[in-house]
Amino acid sequence: MELRQKLELRRHLVLELRQSLNILALPALEVKDLLERELESNPLLEEARRDKTRTKTHTSTSSLSQDSDWDFQASQITRKTSLQDILLRQLAIFTDNDEDFRIGQEIIGNIDENGYLKVQVEEIAASVIVNTASIENVLKLIQQFEPAGVGARSVAECLLIQLRFTNEEDSLLTKIIEFHLEDVAKKNYHLIAKALKEPLEKVECCIKKIHRLNPKPGTAYSVEETQRIMPDIIIEEKDDSLQISLNNETLPNININKMYQDLLKKDDLNAQTKEFLAEKMRTAQELIRAISKRQDTLRKVMEAVVEVQQEAILQDLSHLKPLTFAQIAEKIDMHESTVCRAVMNKYVKTPNRIVALKDFFAGRVYHQNGASVSSAHVKRLIKELIAQEDKKQPLSDLDISHALSQAHQLNVPRRTVAKYREELKLLSTTYRRQK
Image 1 (tube, rainbow, N blue to C red):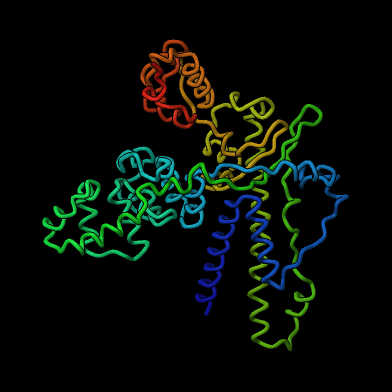
Image 2 (image 1 turned 180 degrees about the vertical axis):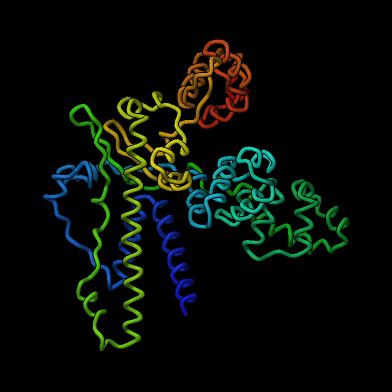
C-alpha cells in the first residue's frame, strides 16, 4: 500500500513538473487562453478581482499599473512566426528530459526554412558531445512534429515521413519515392513501371499521391505566417535605472473557489462527488503553482539578462554583449533547458521597442587577440560591407570573411558569414550582382 502511494505521488509530481515546463514555454496570450479554458472547465477555480491600488504601488515587482494599461494594449503587434519557433514549442512539450531537449535545440537550429536538416548527425553529435544514437533518437521525435516531413535529410525521406503521417504507406509507393524520384520529376512513368514490373496505371496512381505531398514542408510555417503577440515582460526606465515588471494584467487572476473547498471537507459528501472534486482541486493547485513558478522564473531570467544587456536595452541590439543560456542558467542557478523554455516565444517591451527575449542572447565571435564580440555586432559589419560593395563585383562570403579578419581582426569562418547573411535576409553573391 505504501509503495503504491509513493508511485502515485511520483506520477503526480512528474505530471505536475511536465505541466509546469509546458506552461513556462507558452507566451502570454496562450497562457491567457489556457487559464480561460480552465476557468470554464474546473469549478474549483474562480477569477478574483485584482487589487488595482496594490498593483500601482508595486509596479516594479508585480505587473503593469492601471494607468499604463492603455499604452500597453496599444503595443500589441504582429510578428512573423518562424519554423524554429513552431518546432521549439513542440520540443518543449514532447521531450521528457533535459538532455533530449538540449539535443533537440541543436537539431532544430540546423533545420532550414524549407524544413530540412542541413548538417550531418555526426556534426551535431560532436557539437553537443553525445553519441550519434542519441541524436538519431531525438531526430526521430522531431520528425513526428508538425509540419509533416520536417527534419528530413533528403526529399525522399521528407516524402516518406509524410506518408507515415497519412497512413498511405505501401511497398510500391515507397519504392518509387526511394529509388525513382528523378524519373517522377522527368515524367518517365513507363521507365518506372518497367523497372518495378508494375502496370503503368498502378504507377500513375502512386505518382498522383506523391504530387499531393509537400517537398518543402517548412515553407507553410515560415515567415509568411503572422500572429498577434503580447509582451510578457515590460522594462521601464525610471530614475536612471531599469525596472522590470511582468505583464500579469493580461492574465486572469485565478483562485480556489472557497464554496467548493468547504464542500470537499464535508464527511457526508457522496464518494463519487468527493473523488471528482478532489481531482479538480489537484488540477487547480498544480495550475496555480505552475503559473506562479512561470512568473518567478521569467523575472529571474530577465533580471539576469538586464544586468548584461543594459546598453542594448537602452539603445539598440547592435550593442549586445555575448550571452548564452548557459551563462544565465549559472547566474540564477537553474538548468539551461529551463532558461531556454523561459525565453522561447516571449517578448519584452523595452523603453524603445518590443523585441523577442531570445534576441538578447547573442553568440560570440572572437577577436584575434582573444577578446570576443556579439554576433549582432558581426552581423552589422556584414551588412555594412555588403551595402558598400561594388555591385558589379559583389563580395563572396569568403571575401567577407577575409575583410572581417583584416579590417576588424575577427575570426569568422565563411560558413558562419553565410549563416549570418541568410539571417539578415541578404542575397548571395550571384543574386546581388548587377550588370
